[in-house]
Image (cartoon, rainbow, N blue to C red; front, side, top):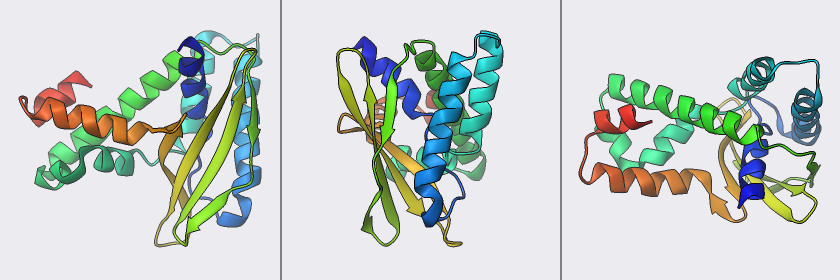
Length: 186
């Protein structure tokens, strides 16, 4: 379980934002190398490492889409202000989770497999995180926007969707509490 948590942190560092299909493979390789270099840099303080890694994920995750999917049909019932507040709180939760997991990094190796295109507007990129004892599969799910650019909207770790997990948790929470309470809990 400990290693899965480390791996979850690494997966947040590998997404893409506004990249065309032809560059996905090289972009993923570059992002992996950037994050690993930051984590291994002994001249950086922990705070500097956090700031640099957050700068990477802030440019690569589509937090708004992730937030929307995580709330499912409940999203449409929210006001614009509630949607914005939820998306902002959700993004903060993702960032904090990411930073917590990166603190567990212990020189794992990451390999990236060629992407697959199951649909014309979907791409999956499978990575393997190789530790001393185990290897874990991480799959990044991308969608294509109206401008033909690709964005991450979900991540699967060992076959479990991050967004579907949040969706179940949020649905259960909202059976007895309000959206404002959910936002505050994030």
